[in-house]
Amino acid sequence: MRKPLVAGNWKMNGTSASNQSLLAEILASAADFSDVDVAIFPPAVYVHQVQQALTGTGLHWGTQNVSSYIDGAYTGEVSAAMISDFDCEYTLIGHSERRCLYDELDLDQLVLDQLVAEKYEMAASSGLTPIICIGESPQEHDQGQTEEVVVRLLDTLLAYQGAKALSRTVLAYEPVWAIGTGKSASPEWAQNVHQFMRERVAKHCPKTAENLRILYGGSVKGNNAASLFSKPDIDGGLIGGASLIADEFVAICRAAAKQI
Ligand code: 13P
Image 1 (cartoon, rainbow, N blue to C red):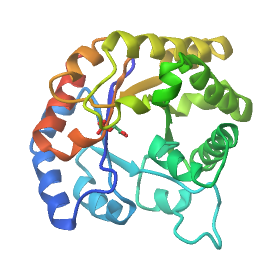
Image 2 (cartoon, rainbow, N blue to C red):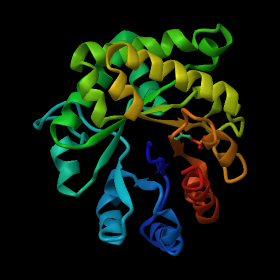
Image 3 (tube, rainbow, N blue to C red):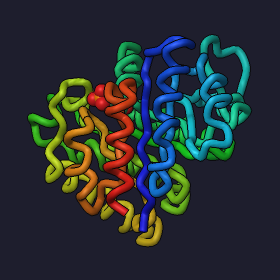
Image 4 (tube, protein in one colour):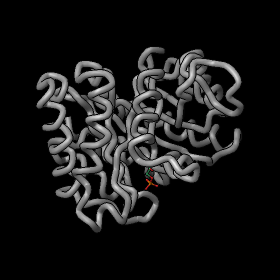
């Protein structure tokens, strides 16, 4: 049985004061989260604040990105070792909002996928659990290329590390057309893609595939979380906007806990 994971990606939002009250409100309901892993992903400058607030509470935290380099002259980057230094357990890798920024540098998709694989390697070697984001753009969606997009990244990862390495990894299916649009993928659509991803990994290692947590992200709210999480291959969510509203986020965590 896979334990669900609900990850709150705060993106570039918050202040010390607003973080403090949001965390306090979430913690007030933490007793309801015993059957679900809950993790918070603040902007890097607030990781220390989150660490201080969540240490000893049973909740987890991580970063929204990690450098593909160990250390050195990489202005503005944050290394995997630095992230571990603040007791982070997780890091997001390859979020579409990061990929778009890289795209401005004219990297093609295959190079981007390789970059994700390099970041993956860096995170895993520092003991972090990478949450790797995968999802098709609106254009790719309209052209029926979802499976192609998903396979391309999965195969790049499998080629770099082999299937066994995915045993310490979480995948997040985040269709770009559903992010921040209020238009979530239907539970049926998401289930089909998640099942496809699991089957792809199973071809390499059935045991890893069985244990692999695959999250859904894209306009998950308190009122659609339960129907998404009721699907057999949806093991929780990666939550953006709703993770900034305590009541919404708590409702999503409760919905995930009920699926046990
Ligand atoms: P929304 O939940 O705001 O659609 O964002 C999803 C997301 O990008 C989480 O990483």
